[in-house]
Length: 363
Ligand code: OGA
Ligand code: NI
Figure 1: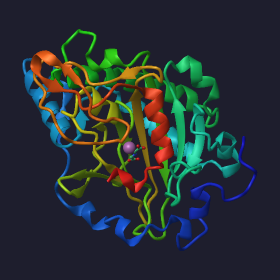
Figure 2 (figure 1 turned 45 degrees about the vertical axis):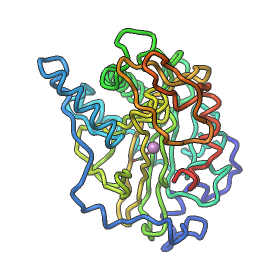
Figure 3 (figure 1 turned 90 degrees about the vertical axis):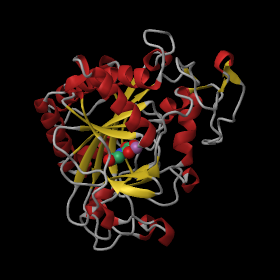
Figure 4 (figure 1 turned 180 degrees about the vertical axis):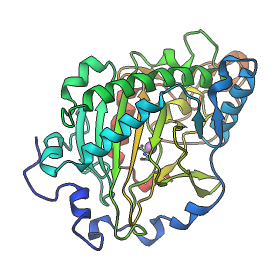
């Protein structure tokens, strides 16, 4: 443990003893959550994966294309991850965060390169305003390389998390096939999304958002885009995720036994901007704790990521996004479409993600 044994290191332990948020959590007035949208009706599409292997497959693929291009987000049901696996994962996550700080803090590290670590906020090393979140981040592919680092308390933690990670990986691989097909990446070729990732890596976060006495002043996680390829998020029954769509934030209402899937930055690059990695954020709640468990599917750090040739022409877009990726040369001369991004290694990209500290420049 690198943390000095200071008490009140973690936000959950601050949360239980204050009736106002400490000043380092207070956002400027222009950058505060709008909690009232939680009741608005608009939400992201729900896609039923049941039909994927039947005669309506093309329709499901169309729905995926529409969701990825218009929202960057969708929800899925009948996804194949057993209900029991989901329930066990949520239960063990809740149990983990209910342990005393002295137990949890054994895993504390502010080093973003550590493959298993507990931390708080987003990146305590680089950010100016803190976020009302505690999280346990785990690398989980291949499981045998990391499982011995994972918490051994609660006693079932490793077994339950391994089962969950394996099951979610299988789902993610199905989603990558669908998304590749939907965006026009040639099937069974070297350029379909899952073949551009090198060895693949998979991370999970167990996010714990304690009740917050002034939920209108701070975020659990401020607006950000996920740096990885795709994410699959499991939420408990408390609503807190918001997605940016057409200039406004929309709330994503939790539906039991579904996952929320979103396009990450690398999918935006591979698809040459056809699909967008979209801003999203987590707001906190004044009387309820909430837990979310995102799985981040990523290229391996040495994988070279860049726009892939499409089976269908890609419209050149002027959208400029991370400064890292200036517009460059043609990728597909036959179809005269322009690669919006230069190629880069995932390591190069990922480091900048943590350094940026989810800063406002994303807007
Ligand atoms: C994330 C994230 C949202 C949530 O961890 O990247 O977007 O609902 N989490 O916790
Ligand atoms: Ni995210």
